[in-house]
Image (cartoon, rainbow, N blue to C red; front, side, top):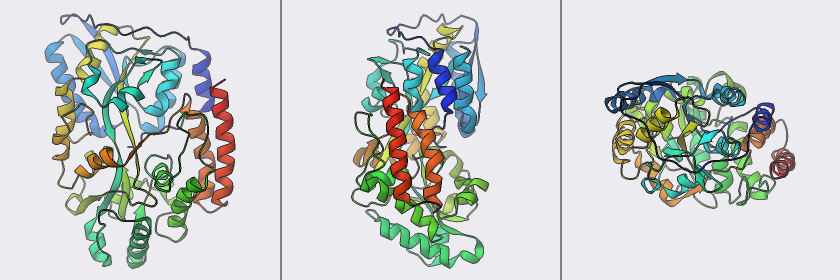
Length: 421
């Protein structure tokens, strides 16, 4: 499932206006194993619910009187709902957080620092840094993901196209996608399908592969108007223009994952979060994984989720105890064995790699060799909204890609200047 967010600017502003400004330091959980409490745990990916049920059951072996109620909200609605709850200090006790939204909540004193019972050394430092603000860590890394190409071997065979190979290029990717679309047009099959309602799955990667950047390293300047970024966006638009990929309207009617699992697309750019769905799909025996194709360089964004506790929780001791259990090696192994996500806890990834018959090692190799930090700033949501307002016109061919990119850069720079005032 996509990890980028499309937040309403009005809602984000409301959160800022209703917030305080101070943060506490870390503390030690004081939960009594016999305490009685009821807490809510909010997340968006229903495919991970079975693993979460097991985690809660094992948590209750230690804390039998703490009831954990699940709150599953579709991703498209999750952060809008969270914004409303934050504005009224009714956030769930424990909930998933992603990189684009983290700083907004941390800087507005909506999150509780992690306790001393959580050892940051168990997680990649990049993820600890992603969920720290002003020197305090608020999120416990849950999992991490890169993006690769899932492909359907049966459709490649049917079209007479050779499988992808390591080190393949944009040109080779495009040639295979177009050849499959042309060969299997009568069956309604496309060469590739790409989710474009956020940048993580496709265009953040192509911008990096072209040598560009979405945002400067100090998070103060947009990179969208550079020739490299424009080249990365143009690559995506060209796939749609010549029929290698479905149109935006077709994607609006049918999500990209559905195209792939229904055998209507031969390739699908996605992350480790798709594993739980794909390994249970009817096409599982035909699936294989290839690294993303390269242009000037090999590149994929790397991102991870975290479990956070609401500062306003009325059962904070119980919430922190649950967060600490979610941070444990045992919880990481449970989600790995379920194929639910690639756990962030160091040394627990093997079970995830072995959870499917296709080569999930590709994602770990990319993380080690060709990954770039996910682009974020203090109010990422503000310019995520601009991306989703403007870029569809570029991808659909309605406007020249360069014109859209330059307008996006100008407006994004205004948003970045505002958040840094």
